[in-house]
Image: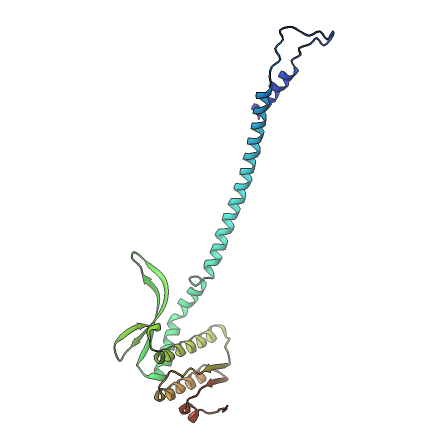
Length: 232
């Protein structure tokens, strides 16, 4: 600011230099009247520079604010993503869900299948969060990803998982759907397996405190033994 004041003082002094007598008006000879153009240009440049610096300072404050906002929203995004709170809740519930799924499978198929939940996987140099389901076939000794099962095998496992999730959710939240609908879920099963499948559904119906389980089917084997039915 002292430089600015000095520059303004120099411009004022230069402009006050007189080349005529203030009393008689006679023009002085050999009087040099300084050119203030350079000084005025310097003043304008300093003023523009000051305004630019003030603008940069305001933009920096705004950028810092936006960075903080971005960090907070990124934290929220991660918290509510598949690897956030949901993953923590699921990881905590995995042992119970796996045990209950295997119990339901055992009631329907005996010891043929069991499921294994994987919540981490090994990368090249570290362990990563993950979620996948493997199915162990105890008759063959093979362990395969759930999606690699045949359609008939997958029905058993998927339905057991659905029921297990439903029951665990009821236990943890005290909320459950009292009515369940199964739309031709036995369609890919062989006839001799459909009765077993119905037995599993009836068992879960009672253990899961369901009020009503509605099963849509074209299977005559199921129609013959189901307790209540509506023929359309």
